[in-house]
Image 1 (cartoon, rainbow, N blue to C red):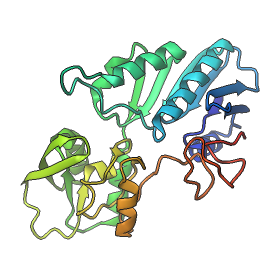
Image 2 (image 1 turned 60 degrees about the vertical axis):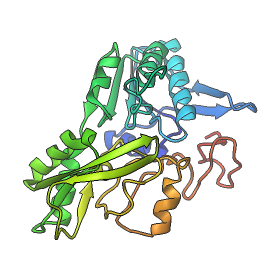
Image 3 (image 1 turned 120 degrees about the horizontal axis):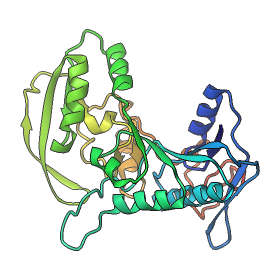
Image 4 (image 1 turned 180 degrees about the horizontal axis):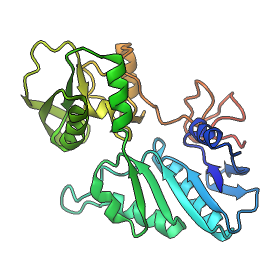
Length: 294
């Protein structure tokens, strides 16, 4: 078995390899001057069972291309089976036609991953369960609910906790957490007239007197936060989300200086403190996911 790491979250890949007692496969994922992605596997993978660890979080398109080209390189290297490990599956929110002449991009990405050479997909907390059916290959959709439940129990044992789903779409998953914790559930009825802008219409459930509320998007592994409009205004226990910088969510939450907000900024492949986007210059040579070759 071999583990190949792209650049979306190098620390995670290293942690997985350490837990398994295996070294990461020697490979280089770099860019030409025009920012084309080039992948080279420096070890023999013929007949091997290979796992490629790569989220398609910010910058989504760059990370997706890294994944696709790596899958193609492994297929052409005659790997026996290739599993794409995607802790965050990008484009998942585009899982249906939201209006006339709009795409179903999640299906397109599923086709691309399959055609690139993946034999199996391993992901976590898909935005919508039906996305598993978009693939013509096996999909393992893992759930983070047991981990979040244990963390909440340890931090807030004996307190009057309530789980809040910030929209109707998150009710099933929020109810799962609430059931495990044997606590109350509330639902926010909001109206979203356009992407990134929402308005709360109603709150279903009694939240009066609750000193702390938990928004499901804040505790769900794999959800994306663009503008943080749903997160600001409530105190969030544990946030493990792909936080895109393009929508301003990182700046908005940073301005709050609230320790209860903790997000994965989606650029974990870089050096500590690195905020580079592809094409940027980074002084932290050797660890920046944007421009440097390992």
